[in-house]
Image (cartoon, rainbow over all chains, first blue to last red; front, side, top):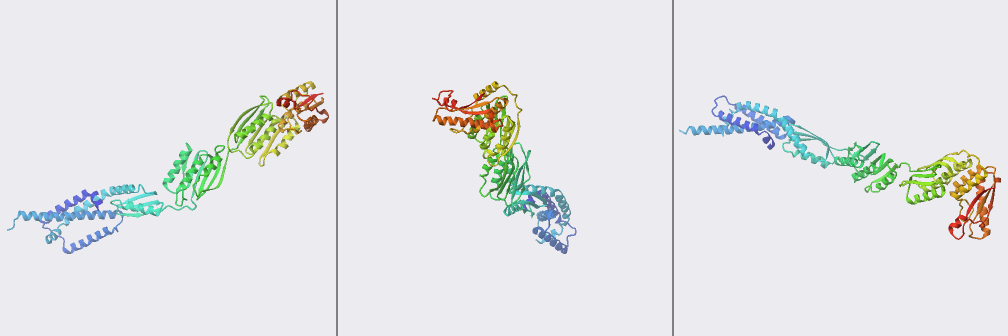
Length: 98
Length: 464
C-alpha cells in the first residue's frame, strides 16, 4: 500500500483533484443521479473487487492493475466527498439563513 | 450524511476520466514498477548463497527460481524477497541443489591446461578452488567444469586446495576425490615430484585417505661415458645422496686407472632401491670396454661399446646381470674392438711396462683373489699379449717383506698364477705364460714405509 502510494503519488493526486472537482459540481448538478438499485449493485461490485484485491486472488499484472484502480477510485471518492462538503459549506456561507 | 448520499449519486460522471487516468497509469507504470521490484529483489538476495538465481517480476508478483544449498537457505531467500517493499506475492520456484552420492571432485592436467571437474559444495568454494588453481599453476589455463552439489564430506575444501597444490607438481595426470578417498595418477614434472606429492598427502585433513597413488616419476637416469681419445670418464645424471656420490666417485677412480673422471652428477631423490649396488658393478663392466656408454634408467641398465677381445665381450654379456640387485634389468650391446696390429716382443714389453706403471693389479688383502676393480687393467694386458702372439711371457709376483718369507713366496706364486689363469680364461694359450713367485726378494722400494711396501706388492710382465 505504502509502496503503491509513494510510487504513484502523481496519479493519486490527479484522482483526488478530479474527485474534488466532481464533488464541487455534484452539489449543484441538476442531472439524473444513479438510482438506488444501481448504487447498491455498484457497492457490491466494489466490495467484491476490494475483497479480491485483499485476498490477492488476481494474479500478476492484472492484480497490480486492480490494486492501482482501487486506490485511485478510493482517492477519487475521498476527493468527491471533500469537494461536495466544501461546496455545501461555501453555499451555506454565501446564503445566510433567512 | 444524508446529503452526502444525495451528492454521491451524482459523482459518477467523473468515473469516465478516472477510468482514462487508470488506463494511462497502468500503461505507463507497469514496466517501471516491475523493473524497480526486480532490482530491489536482486539486491535483497545479494548475500544469499544461491545458484542459478532467476527473478521474474509480473506486476508486483515475483517469480523466484534458484538452487539453494540448504532448506534454511531456501526459506531465507524466499523470506528476503517477500520482505521487499511493494512485492505482493512470491512464487517460490526454488529447489535444493541435488545431492551427489558419492561426492566426486577431480583436477585433471594435460600439457596446456587444467580442468577442474566433478562437484563443489558452494559457489564460493568453486571460485576459491579455481583461484587457487590459477595461483598454483602460474600461466596454465584453468577450465572450471565443476557442478554444484550437496553432500560434500567435512573439510572437503581444505583437501581439494591441498590437492590443487599437488597438480602443479604433475606434468600430466589426474587427482580425484570420491567422498573421502583420494586417487592420484599421472607423471610427475620433476625427479622427486612423486616423493614431494607423497609427503604432502600426509597433510590431508582428518578423515581423508589416499586410495591409490599411481603417480610416476620421470626416469631416474645415470650415465657414464668412457672416451678413449680424451682419456676421460664422464659421469652425468643423478645420484640419491652425497654418500652414494662419494662411493661411485671412488669406485670410478679405482676402476678407471688411466682415465680422468669428469663428475657432472647431481643429487636428487627418487632413485630406485639398490641404485649404488647396480651402478658400481656396471662401472666395472664399462671399465673393461675400450669405449662405451653406460645408461642406468630407473631399473634398466644399458651398456654399449667395444670390448677389447672376444672373451671379454662374452663375459660382460653373460656375467654382469648376475651382479645386480633384484629387479634390475641388464641390456648389453657389446661389440669387439678390431684387433690391433701385431708388434715386436720388445714393443710388447714396453707396452706392458707402461701400462703396469700407470695401474697395478690388486688383490684381496693376504689372498690370491684378484680384485674386480682390476678387470679393466687385466683386459688391457690381455690385449697387449694378443699383439705379440709368438713371444712367451713370464708373469712375476712380488710381495712386501711383512710376514714369513715362505708365506710371501707362496702368496706371490699364487697371485702370479691367478693372473695367468685370468689370461688363459681370456683365450690366450697357457703354454705362453709362466707364473713365477719371487716373494719379497726383489723389492723396488724400501719396505720401511707403507708407500714402499705398496710399490713392492706387484705383478710384472716380462717378455722372454
